[in-house]
Length: 213
View 1 (cartoon, helix red, strand yellow):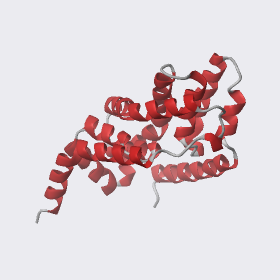
View 2 (view 1 turned 90 degrees about the horizontal axis):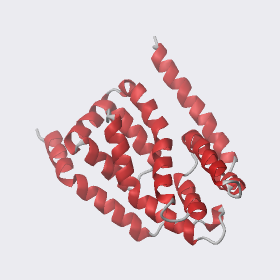
View 3 (view 1 turned 180 degrees about the vertical axis):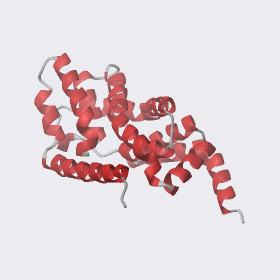
C-alpha cells in the first residue's frame, strides 16, 4: 500500500509539473521589463516575489541576474544577485531535504559522496559548475547537506557567476530576452574545470573505494 508520504511526494511532483507548464506560457523577461521603471524599492520587492516563485515556474536564474545588473549596475547588483540566488534556491533544497528519505539508495549514495568531498567544498564546486541551480539544490537536499553549508557554499560558488551576469547586464543598452547573450564557452569550460579540481582528489578516492572488489 502506498504510504501517505509518498502520495504527498507524488502530488507535489504533479503540482510542480503543472506550474512548470504555466511558467512556459509567460516570459520572465517581459515581467522584469514591466517593473524596471518603478521605484527601486518596488523593483526589489517585485524581484523578491519572482525569485520565490521562480523554481516553481522553471524560469532561468540568469535572466534575473542580468536584469539586476542592468537596473542596479556594479557593484550594488552583486550582493542583490547573491541574496536573490540564495533565496530562490532555498525552496527546492528544503523540499528535497524533507522528502530525501523517500529516494532510498539515491539519498544514501548522495550522503556518502558529500561525506567524501566535504559538505562546503562539494557545494562550492557544484555551484561553480555549469549545472542548473535547481538541480544542485535538489541534489544537496537529497544528500542531506546541512543548511549552513548549503547557504555558504551557494554564496561562494555563485560569486563568479554573479559578477559575470551583473557586468553583462550593465553593458546592455536595453533589457529584453533577445538582448541577453549566451555565456562564452570559455567561461563554461573554466568554471567546469575549477569545480572538478576542487573535488578531484576526494572524488577519485570515493570512486576507487566504490569500485574496489
